[in-house]
Image 1 (spheres, helix red, strand yellow):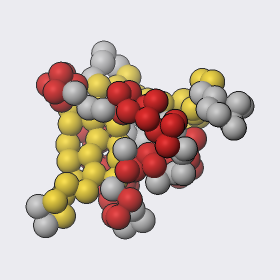
Image 2: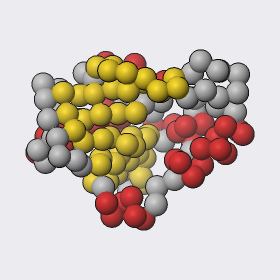
Image 3: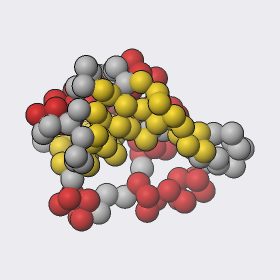
Image 4: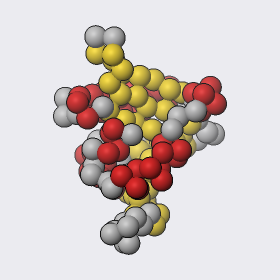
Length: 136
């Protein structure tokens, strides 16, 4: 929640996303989940949902205290390598609009968008991105 709040979303919007952004035990059991740690403290994590060909990177978060140190890129590189070794030919991301540039700079391409309006931003969309086999 701290990482999502970093983007300045209003408290009521963050509260409405709380359940959606929570990671349940069942998610951890069903997906590939990895954490990034510094001196034993968790500073980020990601989860991958394997599928026949296109895997989904459904979480990639870095604690705001540790942003802009390359940890997100390290986690993403690890995720893409893990997916490639697992047989994925594509990794998709349903991205927050604020994270789109990070993914594009890392080799993703935008293939669509889904409406995601919030109060004050009726035209807001979530970019749909993918890393193809050349990027993973």
